[in-house]
Length: 347
Image (cartoon, rainbow, N blue to C red):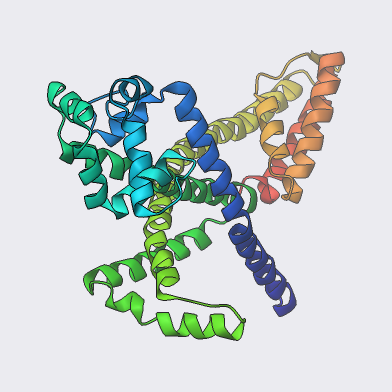
């Protein structure tokens, strides 16, 4: 491979890797929406089990039925008035704001005797309530974590299947694992040495870069690390099956190859024994030439196998339409074995 061609290969792979980064953000947004949608359709109770450590499958703290009995919604509205904040339009944002002023919220909550009685009557505690609110307020982050991981797995599998990026993915996984382990063993010191270089690079591009952004990127790496591990597991399992399939294929091809030689010797003996009778015809060759033809079709880059495929297809068409003379079959087998010996099956 010359330098120009090698450079084109590296350029192509670089473009593909950059394309992975471009495709990744919209993909994980779509996956997040799908995860939310699937959960809502299959079992919305999963949210409540998650937020209550699998104790309840329904909202035992803020359901419309509870609000009708205890007016907990009015208590929440009053708390936002006290905090001098606007009431958000979604539950997660409401809980997040209330938790930032937890003492003020609990103070208002304790004034709602009906709600406090409800908690006591149902063996619920304020600690469980706060834990529930923290879990729900963090729900989007949990779904995003899952989608970040799953999207990376999808991208790795796509580039592996479409572009045969196997060695490249293993190298990237190895580099990430070294970085991650060094960072873990040094309690985060190793990753922090890259903060200033990344900040300077951002400043050169005219972008603001903060420590919070950097920490977000560092926290993002474990999801990619697990995605790499998942790919490696799938690839390892796939490799086991590929090796089994390869052994079966090799065994089948070996049987065919030796059957060709055996059939050729048999026909030569038949021709010699019937040298005075030139009218003997062959109507069937008991060798799986269809398998050989399919194998040759899947390996079109092999010139010898291209000839094998053409020879085999032509022979099968002829023998299916009419019987062939012994000489014709012998010539076909000799030519076929010659092509196979010339490179078709040597590898």
